[in-house]
Image (cartoon, rainbow, N blue to C red; front, side):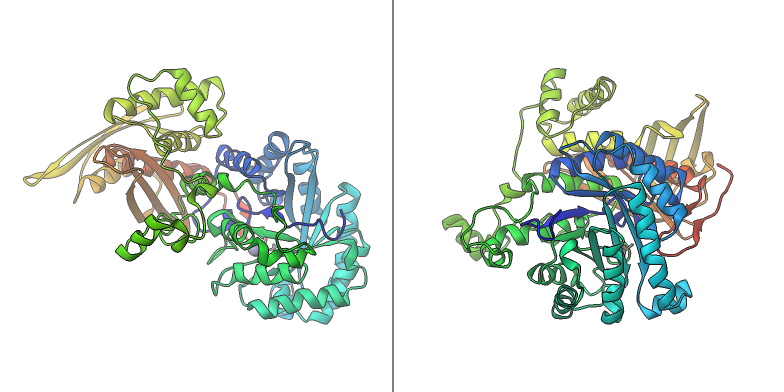
Amino acid sequence: MAKDPGRVLIFDTTLRDGEQSPGASLNLEEKLAIAQQLARLGVDVIEAGFPFASQGDFAAVQRIAEQVGGDDGPIICGLSRASKADIKACAEAVDPAPKKRIHTFIATSDIHLDHKLRKSRSEVLEIVPEMVQYARSLVDDVEFSCEDAARSDPEFLYQVIELAITAGASTINIPDTVGYTTPSEFGSLIEGINKNVSNIDDAILSVHGHNDLGLAVANFLEAVKKGARQLECTINGIGERAGNAALEELVMALHVRRTYFNSFFGRDESCPTPLTAIRTEEITKTSRLVSNLTGMVVQPNKAIVGANAFSHESGIHQDGVLKNRLTYEIVDARTIGLSDNKISLGKLSGRSAVRARLEELGYDLNREDLNEAFARFKDLADRKREITDRDLEAIVSEQVQLPDALFQLRLVQVSCGTTLKPTATVTVVDQDGLEQTSVALGTGPVDAVVRALNSLIEAPNELIEFSVKSVTEGIDALGDVTIRLRHENKLYSGHSADTDVVVAAAQAYMNALNRLISVEGTSRIHPQKDTVVSKLKPVI
Ligand code: KIV
Ligand code: ZN
């Protein structure tokens, strides 16, 4: 591909850097569901994971390469450190995709070289061409990243980048790994690379950045002005520490301010051609799916996808918007797929109506999953008069969490009130069909349920978050519960929605326990830490 594709390429790393957020680990089905939605959203590249990390990560990248990367679909990419074993595993995992990429990286800042890698600059100058060439011997599309580029000596960076391009890298990525830089500094760095790397015209310049100072999106937009043409970002900005640059914010900035950015692409100011290939109407749905499956709640005031992003509280604003929307709104909510789409599904709706609506929402379920979704729909319709799109999304996203479940919640019953001691009875069934029941008292109904479940399933943990929000308005709304548990310094999340918040809490807790138990049984390597983050433990 030429150095300038004439627009910005969106490289989504929700499933790799996003999944490095504490507590955001996803199972294979969940990763697949997110990857399918990212393809519908129209991202150019999906970084599906770090295949060398574990068998589970390898399998997820491979499944995504098989099922999501079509000829017209996104490039499927895997991350690998600059080592042969990593690169080989990555090549095998992405192999089924018609369009595949290996993304290999090594740190270039002195602080990382001295303290993390314990390597000299000259060693790095030897490793880079060797590893890029090796990756190129396995796939045609190789991306190379200089980890901690924003804190690296620019002169050294130029040398590394030149060698990587000569060795065959067609994308060069410049990460602000620790979220340290400012927009003008980052812009100058990109400008300097464009000026001083002799073969830079043979590669696309990409940027990657973390949000430690809240500047990631601003840094990227400055980089675009200086010639960066690939942006590495995540849905809802999830990722290590304060997260990555948020995809929805970047895309909507380039959409809403197209006339401002057009000139940096050599276009006429009024050129109507979009600057990205993203289908913006899919943004809201993608954001909700990622939030539901990762358990990473979106803050209400979050730009573009926060619950308050389109609500006007003050009378003056409301009055202005009623007279002319443009007085206080710069984005039409419909552009990001946010509408009050109340559909007339209810108790009497049949299977085909539910299937048709799910298809319109982008969920193409197989027969078995549709049957399951329909059963859940019927159950909900008995308790709730009107079923909205958000209710359907809650039903489907919960289903995705369940296939690998080691334990299923069969029954939950509580008694509580002003004069009663909160008491819960729960029944759990394991994969062999063995059913067990327990009763416990608690300080409240949720505490009682948690105690009863803990007495049945031995997975020591500390409950660190329990949050409930309603999916829609109204007294019969579904209560959406997110639970986060800590076990040996790692976080595990579970999510569930039900008209009964205690049932939702029990199911969310069960989902989090299932995740803890299945993740605990595997070792996983962190790509940027060089250490095994969880030790092999017998499955409980
Ligand atoms: O933040 C970072 O530097 C990364 C690299 C591995 C691209 O995530
Ligand atoms: Zn990163």
